[in-house]
Length: 288
Image (cartoon, rainbow, N blue to C red; front, side):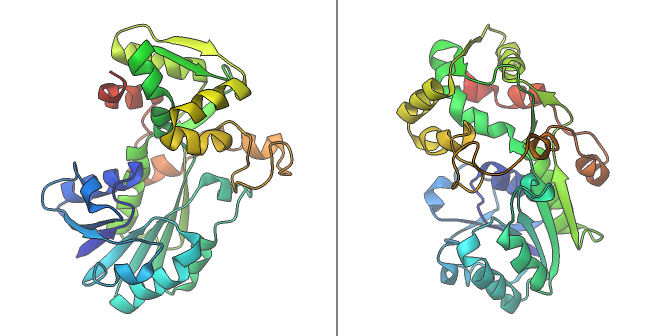
């Protein structure tokens, strides 16, 4: 069986590809920019395709039995229809834990469920890797992190664990019709996260608490992902990118449900999730 991995150069997608190859599966990986596919394992077939232009996926879907679907709402119906027509039997889609607690509706899930194919939703909480793109530049340059929310707990999940759940659902029976909420094994404050990065480096990393407004200025100046995600990460915009902070109608109780560990990851994998300290050690090269 060939498994098609869309969004294959993203944090989760790269890990899905790697773990499928380690399982001995034939993998085809799609990306809008094939030149960005460096670092994927040997033997992976890379196909240039764009989920925002579904027609570009037709060739990539040939001979595919299972599909890991990165969510693009605007074209989900057409992409899933093409997959079904091509003979795909199973779809595992990347969603979000906010769906599990009623904070967000993901139309991609609805499309996948209505397809008549085997489906599994993988709903991760906040990615540990998001902070990599926000903090790594200042850690590399100055051994410092400037960010608000010093002592607010965050339950974050390792991208390799999200991928591991997705891979099980792609390769094993028994996951059809399930929605897995994937969290880390414990919450970590920003202060604790920075300390873990310093411990992994074996050098002190200073934490300077700044206001949300100042953090926003710093991230916007940094450019790239940091600039693009600053409003969302700092609470100036809600998950859907619409309402301003405090105007989204969500209660603190809703959000607190995502701060506790959920059991799904351990039930699927038979082990606890990786900790933030594990993640920091795995990414030591990025911070150094």
